Every structure is written in C-alpha cells, then in structure tokens.
Amino acid sequence: MYRLYDAEERLLYVGITMALKQRFADHQRQKFWWHLVQRRDVRWYDDRAAAEAVEAEAIRTESPKYDGTSRIADWVHARHLRPKDPFWRPVAESVLARIQDGTYPVGSPLPSPRALASLYEVSESSTGYALSVLYSARVVGPHPQHVVRRLSDHRPLKGPDAPSADEHDKGPCPQKVDTCSCRYAASVRVADCCS
Image 1 (cartoon, one colour):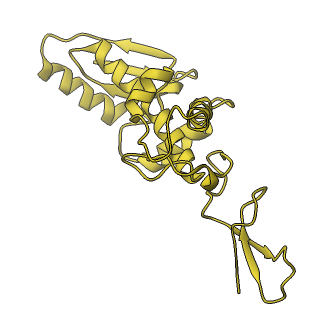
Image 2 (cartoon, rainbow, N blue to C red):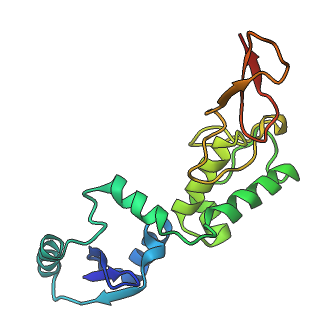
C-alpha cells in the first residue's frame, strides 16, 4: 500500500499495488495531479486482502485529496497549483512547429497522447491537454485522431483559461457597416461578418 503526499505533507492519494514501479509510471502518465507529489510512503503487507482493508480505512479516516469522489473540484485545485511554465505548452508548441514544417502533414492524424507523452517525457494528461489546446486553436480536428487541419484555419495557441477559437467576442464591424456585428478572436483576423 502506498500514500502520496504534496510539499505541505497533505495526503493526496492512497493506493495498493503489487507492481509499484509500474503503478507510479502509470500515475505519472495518467494522473493530472501527479506534479504535486513530493513524498511517497510505501508499506508492504502479507496479502492483498490485508492491504485492501488498510487502504479502505485510510481513505475513510485520512481523506486523501484525490480519492476520486470529487473529480471536478480536484482538477481545478491541481490546475491552479501547476507550475507557471506548464508542461503542455512546450508539447503544443513543438507539435505546432512539426505541423508547420511538414513533419505532420495536413490531413494526417497526430500521434496518440501516450506516444507524445513518451516522446516529450511528460504525463499523458499534459499531452492530452496540449492536444485540446491545439484543437481549440483549430490546428487539429477532434479526438480521437486529431487530424491536422489546413494552415489557414489555425489560430494562436491560448492557455487553459483563455476562450477557445469558437468563443468569439462580438464587437463593432471593422468594415464599418452599420448593421453588421463581426465575430472575431482577440489578435486574430476577422473570421466572418454577419448581419
């Protein structure tokens, strides 16, 4: 059985496994909160039933932050505690550069989040987030294949709290037509004009 703690000694997670090294590698790839882990406490038990009983009691009495009961609140908490230079940004920028240089041609699918996580040595959740940012910027199509879109469709990459490319602000028409309200994204050319 293992307990994972953050820098302030708050219990983040309790789990059991017989393959500790593999479980931690899986957590690093898949858990959005893994970057918070600063200390690991591991205890071995004679059988799985004993470990399960201790785990259940620990979850009940110690209230680990990420026990799976409040995923949305947990994700918001972890997102706000991420380092200022997030792990997804270098991945998104590198993938965009590879698209622009033709390594990933228009119409082709991108590698999976798992393959990108291995390539960039970051968690799978970070690469998944990088792909969602690329999707919001109209660089790639939707999951699961994330097919590369035409370069003329691309918008600037934005962080987690910025509006997506589809959430346009409304403002006065730059063409100065009285009945027109144009939809546009900040610092992007006018997308279209409507009456």
